[in-house]
Image (cartoon, rainbow, N blue to C red; front, side, top):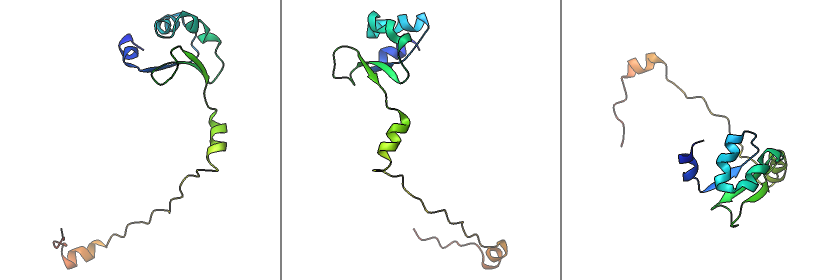
Length: 107
C-alpha cells in the first residue's frame, strides 16, 4: 500500500498486521495507540476510521462471520432458481443452402 492510495481512502479498515512498517504507516491515520494493538486483534476484528463511521475516533469492530450471516440471511432471502438453459436450435447446413440465406430481417 502506498501513501498515495491511503490518502485517497475515505474509510480505513485496519485488520491484524505484524510488520512494523504497516503499523507505522497506519499509525498516521488511526493513531499510535490503535496501531500498536493491530498485532493482537482477533480474527474478523478491525479498527475502523473515516467517513463511513459516525465516530470521530477510530472504533474497534467485529466483522460478520460468513456462515452466521448466511444462516440468518438465506431463510429470508433465498437465492433465485434459474431454469436450465434450452439448447439453441440450429438448422442443418443443407436447409440454409437449399432455402438461401434469410435476408428479410425486420427492423
